[in-house]
Length: 388
Image (cartoon, rainbow, N blue to C red; front, side, top):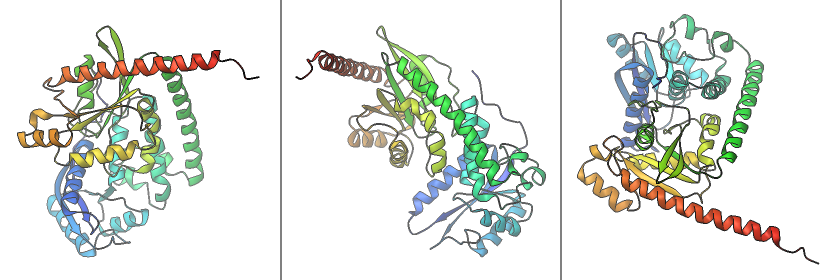
């Protein structure tokens, strides 16, 4: 089983900063900050403290108020932390202002942290291309920053794994050119994927989608006996993984995809659309949800919003609530009442697998019926006499 390559280095201490506005409910802001903590840990950092500031509006200069900046400055010194991670995106000028007020401190935002994780976990040529495109697009509006500090002042670490210092020093024109070159390469990969999808037209295909860390890879392993990399971290796998499932003499193709997350940058979704293409070509969608997550409803909403415009609404869907072995009875009852059509499973403990396989069989039979009807219709049209 191949694991993503990561450089071994001393873990960096960081402080997290979230903002709650009147439009964001306090409990949601807390959940988002907790998720940012998991992202930081996935990137290899140690979270020393978290701050959540409630404001009416974002500060155009530093996102948070001057008083909070001073409070964080003192905390950094006391905790010997060298990095601050904001849960909201920062503009180039905001980063520059914060670095001036917090000398010697690395300042990152949520998108920068996600991109760093993506860069570390990208294994295939395709995912590396997609990550580089996303990184360069992220750099474009931030070129006013002194980018050399990432390599010289902070000596590498989280948020510095990118295309390299030479790329960071190029101007917008060179970056645009590089993005165009990378997108051409990705287009060729997408064409190859389209050809592969056409060759598989005679095999029932299931696309697995869901929030990050919902257990999609574990479920793929359970169903197929595969060795897809699994770890209890956000974005443990980025590349789409295709495996065969043998079901009563029939072959079914299961394709796992990159997980979703709240506040996922739009350009990142656009970049990874080619990876999600395996789900777009699927005959059935298997939506995996962490049934034990306190905010599972928002996970559902994020998944549906991300897939909008990528997957045909008419494509049949199977919804499973995973990790029921750690969900209490009240949660399992709630899921059963609100989502009676869904299947409650535990990929880890092999619970509900037979019911899921039966659902696959039912969907396979319906797919065969639709295909037979479509072929009959096409044959009828082909044999119809030309009008006089």
